[in-house]
Image 1 (cartoon, rainbow, N blue to C red):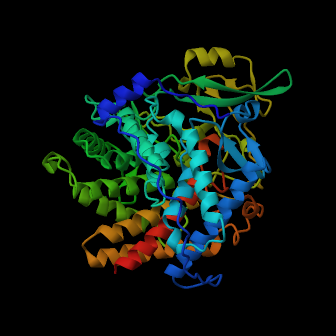
Image 2 (cartoon, rainbow, N blue to C red; image 1 turned 30 degrees about the vertical axis):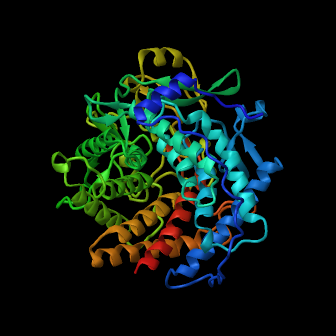
Amino acid sequence: MIKRKIYPAALISSLLVLAGCSKQPEVEEAKPMAKTVTKPVTAPATQSFSFSVTMAQDNLTFAKDQYLKMISHVENKQNLYYRPECKQDPSMLCIPRSQEHGAIFVDKYGKWTNGFFPGVMWKLLSNKDNIQWSSGQEQKLYDSAKYFQQALESDVGRTSTHDLGFLLYDSYGEALHYDELDSKTRQQYSQYLDVGRAALATRFSDEKGLIRSWDWAPHMKLTTIENGEQKVDLYSLSNPWQFPVIIDNMMNLEFLFDSDVERYHEIAFSHAKYTLENHYFYDEADKAQQYPLSYHVFDYGENKPGNWQGLGNVSAWARGQGWSLYGYLTVVEAMAKTKVDLSKYPDFDNHLNRLLGSIEHLLGDEYVPYWDFWAARDNAYEYAENVSPDTAIYSGILELCAKRLEDHITPYKGYKPQRLDASLLSDESLKRLQGKKNWYGEDVIQGDKIVPCGSKPYPANHQKIPRDTSASALFASALYQFAIITKDDAKSQKYADLADKIMLELTNNYRTDRNQTRKDSLGLGFVLAEATGNMGSAGEIDTPIVYGDFYFIEANARKIAYEQRK
């Protein structure tokens, strides 16, 4: 039995009314899946100087084989590392997310990444004509996609999260692109998407003009030693955000635009407008202000920016720049189709072109960036230690102890223990920490300072600054799509060429059959090595992550679409 939350019929009905749809009559099942006609695909040499359609097709076939392998592990309950809730309740349908502790990390319901696993399968199925199949593989992938898609039913009507674009559009939405999806399931999935859009729209503030990202307050995560044992706990901040909006939220807008409801388009354009106005800054070296960079989070309560996931409160978090570029690409695509009056909105076309320039500038000739573009700068530690009152959003980097990381990993150049102002924490938190020892055996509170990670230098073996292949895959996918939609032939060729360089690097050096960082990743079924999830929380560092594979697969499909249109 699959454990999932079922929303009351009254709530579903009310959200459907908001979505402008009603229950449709039952339709007959589609005919059985037709036999796939495969095209021959020639595997490329390990090294090449150009990224070709043949290489893209080979990547898609490799991804198909890998995910069938991962499905087998999950079905046989082998090589899995469970979130505790999944292990405690065998009836819960949990979803593969990343590689952790030498196994496939399987996460519980409700997590923002859960749409990507079935989404990968749907995306492969919808691009089946560019994949080599063996007997029964397509049917197996189809059955598995439908099975794991059930885990997302509990998210359809959720109004407590902004991540419905990731959860629903990247799974149910992907399924609709598969021609052999049976008609009854197609109708059901379409209705779920309508309900999800209505749920997402409830998070929009007419006063702020934005979709609120998070309902939770930030905390400092500290490890203390109590009775000789480690105890991890959360401590509240003295000045938490009031109305946080993160750049990831731009990825929800495509979900809203893919609807005939004009209200959803207005919400999306409004969100894009205020994000453009508030979420961007410039590197101090960029005197001409040519290359806008995105903060991760902006608090519309205090009107202050920051980076919950970046190197510091002001830095260029790599995947955040990917969310930014991809998000505004979807805005520009929607402009050509919407009936909304665009005269009251900023020049989104111009902003997108500037973001394209930023990505080109940031990458230079290194096509897989560090997890934060500034992490390898000689003064990276200065960004990490920034607690300017003008950027009051707290960053987990401030209390990221070396003991929470693998022995070879360092998050940035100059990484060292930090002494933080005690005023960062609430009075209640400071009372709780009185007399407690940190992980390193020293007092946490020392005068007017907090010392979360001791005072001694970290071991010298912490050397590798992780990169993020998921950011590169995002860049490549967005660049190919821009090359497809733009009417400027020169720009189309320019950014398709940049995407080719990124994809060549990922294909030759970061596919799990060609990368040496985690040699067991290939056997577990992952596609791309060396992604980085949440550095500040020491989560998913230098490891395969399912959403990195999702955007890599999408980029390969878009490469083929780009070449076919020329």
